[in-house]
Amino acid sequence: MSNHVFVLDTNRRPLTPCQPGVARSLLKAGKASVFRRYPFTIILNKEVHGNPEPIELKLDPGSKVTGIALKQGNRIIFAAELQHRGQQIVEALRSRRQLRRSRRNRKTQYRPARFLNRTRPQGWLAPSLQHRVDTLMTWVNRFRRLAPVGRIVQELVRFDLQLMENPEISGVEYQQGALQGYEVREYLLEKWGRTCAYCGAKHVPLEVEHIQPRSKGGSDRVSNLTIACHSCNQAKGNGDIRDFLSGQPDVLSRLLRQAKSPLNDAAAVNSTRWALFKALKATGLRVTTGTAGQTKFNRLRLNLPKAHWLDAACVGDVESLDIVTSKPLLILAKGHGTRRMCGTNKYGFPTRHRSRKQIHKGFQTGDIVTATVTAGQENWLLCRTGSLPCLWQF
Image (cartoon, rainbow, N blue to C red; front, side, top):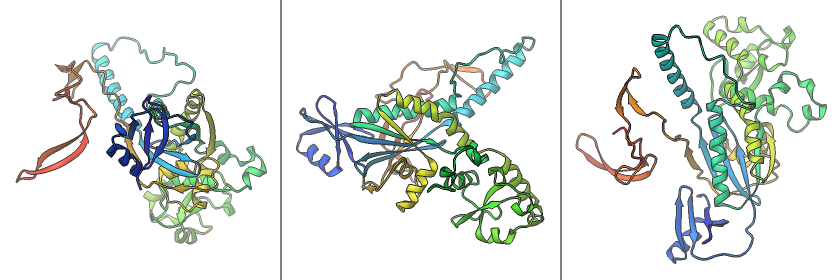
């Protein structure tokens, strides 16, 4: 089942998305034209009067992948997964920093350091974090132009780190309600990669395990919890972790080191959640929120598999869902190129001028093309579809 097709009237006003079969009939009859291919959108040849049914835009922000779902009534009619490039930005900034420090150490070694005389505005985010907010808002505004979005639902709290460290900060209703244990368990699954911390087993039922047993003074803090399979959990029992892993010193050191370290992905999401929430509120639409524990509770109750777009569909208050699509749109964040004024070699020295032309032979970077290319020693002709690389380098 494919995603629904976005529909615009002749004035580019968004209408209710239709099924792919209806879109094909309109195109064959000459009543509509292709307006956009990704996501596929058609534009009618006439104006349509009436108020379309509002659609709910649901977001599951993640550190690497963000799930997006469009809900009409109780039907999920469109799904997408947005892959971020935060780590690429971090690596690019690190490379730029290394080249700059090397150059300044050689040329200006007697100048005082300048990295401690800068002030950052309130609410400043690192470029790799700001990218996640900006990219997601770009697609939110894009969906608003293609569909009659009336409400936005965001997973605001990925993991309540303070609550998991100190359960006494909130009431009994939260701790003993329907979501009891879901927040901590989901955090541990993400932190330990959904594998057994002792034997590395995957795709098996995992249990919450105390590293230091409670019978020997261990606490319920999240830094003393891990994930283990049933056999390892029973084999360890109430024994000391150092005795249990005495024959595996590498596993012991890794486990103790990782237990104290925070979850980087959760920290990234928690850093950007309020910036994204404020940006969504600025759209003027109604914005509601949910938690990661509530999302997983809904997904398990509805017996849905683990996927980013299905997590987005389960964000917030959900009674029932009718999934009418199974092929989410894959969105890759590619960035907007580079600000370099010249090309450099591997040492950072300029070697060539940068071309001022953006379009080369009718194409530009990022265009989706279908081309016949040669492959193999016998020069077979293969038809490939993909995105064009940066053209100015060639």
